[in-house]
Image (cartoon, rainbow, N blue to C red; front, side, top):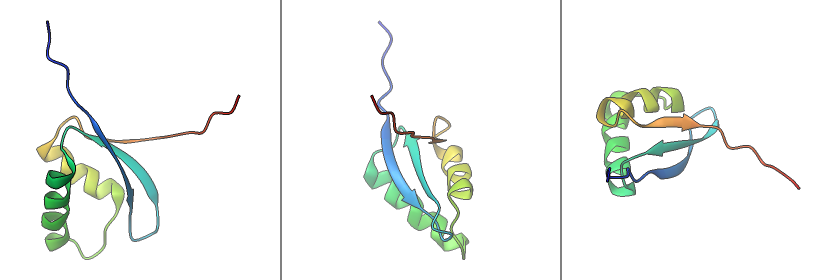
Length: 71
């Protein structure tokens, strides 16, 4: 039986107040640690740039779209 990958979902805002969700295999503590590392090399923070940075550590990380559905 194949081991299932656990995914964690986070809401993030960047300096342009762009709101996104990301999916990662990293838990919150690791994401916060990587955010601090990212902040040291970036004056402005953009979600697309952070996700590119995150993918170097977690190739399964991605921005995801969440759309409301009514019924």
